[in-house]
Length: 233
Ligand code: IPE
Ligand code: MG
Image (tube, rainbow, N blue to C red; front, side):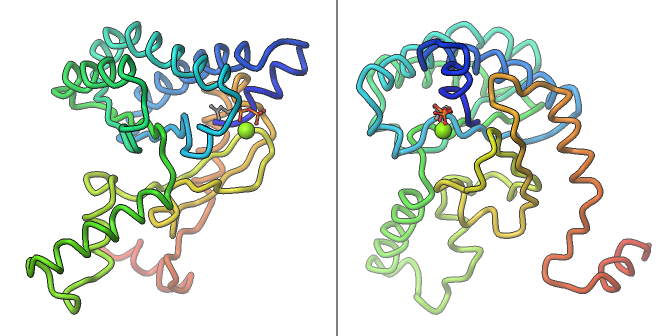
């Protein structure tokens, strides 16, 4: 979700005004995904690097986070949405930690869309953590180095319970991954749009999905192989 600051600037407003409107897009897109029967949606809400923004913006964002989660739990439950988190939660303020913990607990039984919030998340942080945990397991003799496979690494990442993303959308005309799910995105289809996040609505999501449906996902194989597999019973 990118472009909140620029959206606000275009309107001569403060950056936090953009973040506030970004929440409207979050509501709309979460609802749109639930309606389509999408099983997993990950929103990159706050990166490890975002902690280095001016203090007023960081605290404004954290307040908005706590406030939104508090308000949205009933809607999540109504729509059968389960909230999950990835990221370094130790960094979060106490109030946010508590709200998040409650929201995770209250939505844990929902079986529809899994909404994964990437908060205080960065892929390099996640991979570093995974390597540390793997090293500990090896040291304890629970894991042999020769047993380490890509599947082992998958199991040590914070996304171990979730499938790899099929589609990644980045708004606001930036062509970067910005430390997001670097390992998991290996074969994800990437979609970039100039629309700023506060303007991004269900219609924009449908456009992205329609384009995704025209992509051929080969996973390193040839087109002929993929077509043959698709047509075989
Ligand atoms: C995305 O919008 C929201 C967060 C990172 C929290 P930005 O705040 O990055 O907006 P721009 O990139 O300055 O327009
Ligand atoms: Mg940005």
